[in-house]
Every structure is written in structure tokens, then in C-alpha cells.
Length: 426
Image (tube, rainbow, N blue to C red):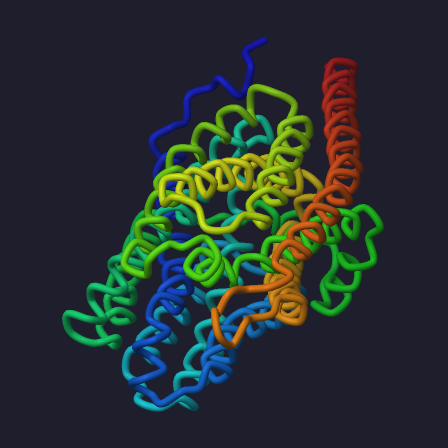
């Protein structure tokens, strides 16, 4: 029997991967450009650092809330129509970000953008789960999540270039312009994705939401996602400050650190996706977690080091993060039944956003900053906590792996039973 993982993708499947990857890229880019433009935005709109923190977190929390609110409706519509609705709303919110001229209106625009943009990732994952087999999804997830690396490569330099060459409004309008072109492609080429409508059971949205949340197997997957997000976001907001003030990276070389890490992600994502389809997904996840734990603990204890060493550590860290991101996303996608996938992915994405916000708050309570040297303190404590959380996530992902294998085996037995019945009837 031919291995499904080695089956070539059709031209249409390749287009689906491309269109979902570019939607992810625009959504992540919209979020990523906020950080490098922080100084420009604070001066232009006369924001304090706390104001800017609120403007950034407004997107994450509204995105998380949006996912919870829409989860009950996620499996009631054609996924193409759902993607279009939220993506058009995201374009509108990004245009609003490019037109506002005050702090309060910027926060409002970020909330609107988050309400629509925060759901797009979960819809994309539901489409992938519907159109690709579990054996193919590692490759597919690897390419779709290239948006994460591409946003790092393009987000910081392009965002800063447009903001300094013209003004920060142009940056948001450029993202919206690119996203508008994607809308046209979705409308004209993407086919309806509605097979799940034929087997949907729950009619009331709230009942469907409760059915999804109350499922014990689903809660295991949700918890593993939440822990991974908390761990990641505890470190991320302080990465730039730690590199500049503790490791001795000059501010003009900081974008280069992100670009090098982003390029490594662009290379690692497809490779990890391919590897995820060839080897045991849980083992790949576990090895990548252990790799990341070691790198994080060593990195957070470092003082002033040469630039090339900072760049190297960021690369090996991103390889580890990528190595756990692709197989974990693939495994989690195999947990829900078809009729629950939209709701499951919405809740999962919401927990990712909300947990990330919580992680950033916890990290902010732990990390201190010297008023004279500006060096960060207790960053190594965050490293230890992230390592501990990562260990727990390995245990939870093992349970997810067992759930997926049990579900896959049950589906195979059902298919054999259906074939036997068909033979008897003949």
C-alpha cells in the first residue's frame, strides 16, 4: 500500500497551502510590525510605555475573546465563507489602524483587528484538517507556518523602513493592501469547504460550544496548547531588551538578529514538516522540547557576548521552537471529530492568544530592570520556569499522541467494517 505521506499534492492542494500560508503571513505580520514601530508610535501618539503595552495586548485579548465567542458557530457554515468574512474584517481593522491619529483610536482599531484576525488561524487549521490526511499535515503545517518566519524576516525591516521613509500609517496600509489581493484569490479560486455540514449534530451554537469544551479528550489538547503558549510568551516580550542591555547587541544590529532567526525559521519549517510526516510526531516534539529547554536555560544566564554568538543562539532556539511547533500542531489537529473541528480550532486558537497574554503578564511580574544600567534581572528565573512548563507539556503531548492513535485505529476499524458489510450485501 502506498504511503499517504509520499503521495504528491495536487495543483489545487498546493494552491490551498499557498493561500492559507499567505493569510497567516499577513495576520502575523500585522501583529509583528507593532513592536519594531514602538518608539515611533509612542512619540507620534504621545504614548507612555504602559499605553503601548495596552495597545499591543489589546489585539491578543480581543483575538482570544473572539475565538471563544465564534466557536459555537464555527461548524455551522462553509469554511470558505467563514474565512472570507473574518479576513475581510481583518482587512478593515488594519486599514483603520493606518488611518487613526490618537492612542485611544489605535487601541480601538487593534481590538477590531484582533476580533477578526484572531479567528483566521483556527479556520485555516480546520480547512487543513478537512482537506489533508493526518499523514500529509506535517508538510502542510510546515509550509503554512512559514508565515511566522517570514514575518520575522520582513516584519521588522519592512515595517521600520516604511515607517521611517514615510510614516507609520503606510505600514498598516501596505499590509491591508496585500491582504486585499488575498481576498480576491480566496473569492475566485478557493472552493467551498463544507463536508462537515453533512454530519453536524448540535444545532444550537451554545450547545455545540459546550459539547466541545466538555469533551475530556479535547481538554487535554487545549491544556497542552495553553502551556506551550504561556511558556513562549513569558520570554518573548523581553527578548529585545535582554539582547541589547544584557548581551551587548547594539540597537542598529538588533533587526539583523531577528532577520537571521527568521531566515532559519523559513528553512526549518518545511524541513520539520517533512520530518514530522516521516518519523514519530511525538518523539520529534519531545526531542525538540528537550533541545529548547537546554538552549533557553543557557541563554538566559549569559552576559555580554559577541554578536555572532547571540545570532547563533537565536537560530538554534528557533530550530527547537519550530521542531516542537509543527508536530504539536499536527497532533492536536488529529484530536477533534470532523463535526467539531471548527469549534475545536477556534477554542484552541483562543486559548493560545489568552495564554500568551497571561504568560507575558507573568514574565513582566518576574523580570526587573536596573534603572541605571537598564539590564534585566531574574530573566534566568523565567528560563527555569519555561523549562519546567516545557517538561509538563511533553507529558500532556504524550497523552494527545495516544488519543490520536486511538482515534486513527478506530477509524481504520470502521472502514474495514464498512467494507465487510458492503461485501456481504453484494
